[in-house]
Each structure stands twice: as C-alpha cells, then as structure tokens.
Amino acid sequence: MSQQEKKQSLFQRIKNAPFFQKKWVRNKYTITLFIFFIYVLLIDENDIFFIIKKQRTYSKLKGQHESMLDKYDTVKSQLRKLSHESQLESYARSEKYFKAPDEDIFVITYKEKKR
Image (cartoon, rainbow, N blue to C red; front, side):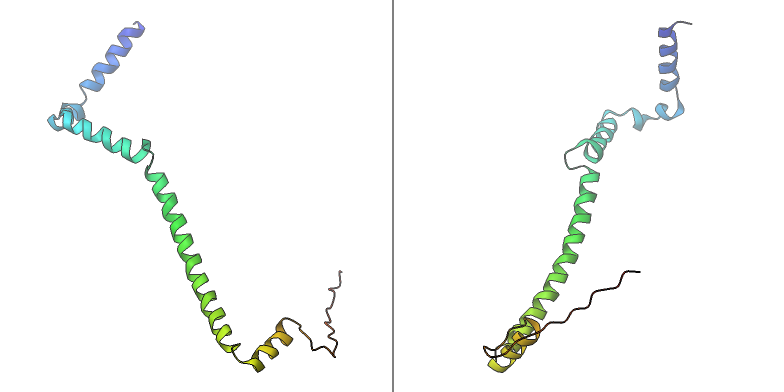
C-alpha cells in the first residue's frame, strides 16, 4: 500500500465516521462557528489565558487597594491627633527621636548573640 493510498484511506475513514455523517456537523455555519470559537478562545490577542491573567492581576491590585485605604485611614486619624501642639511634641519625641535644645537622647539597641 502506497503512502497516498494510506492518506486516502485515512481521509475516507474520517469522512465515513458516524460523527461526520450527522447533518449539523457538515453544515458550513457550524464549522465556521466552531473555527471562530477556537480563534477567540486560543489564538486571538485577548485569548482566554490573557483574560485569566488580567483577572488575577486585578484581584491582587484590589487587595492592595484595600490595604492602602486602611493605611490611609490610620494616617489620617494620626494626623488629626497631631493637630494639637502638645500631642505633636510627644509624638516627635517618642517616634522620631526629636529633642529639645538642652537635652541629649540615647537610643539603646541590643545586638543579637550568634550561637
């Protein structure tokens, strides 16, 4: 059996398969629609993989947005607290280690021992 006969027999077997005998499968509109869906899902610039990747990125950014809103609220409340002069001074001394002109500040840190 030659190569062309094998190809022809394979084509004949596919053509005569029960699935391809159905009328709706041989319809040109069905075939066109199937090719269109394959193109849209797998080949197009905005294929299904691109959409899934963008959805994951969007959900990650949405989580970051929520955390930034929380940080914004804490900073805004802290700023409201610092609107008074006495609270501003206590914050500057405790958090930022500011000092008055006539005093010294010593920050003590401990080194961790290596075993």
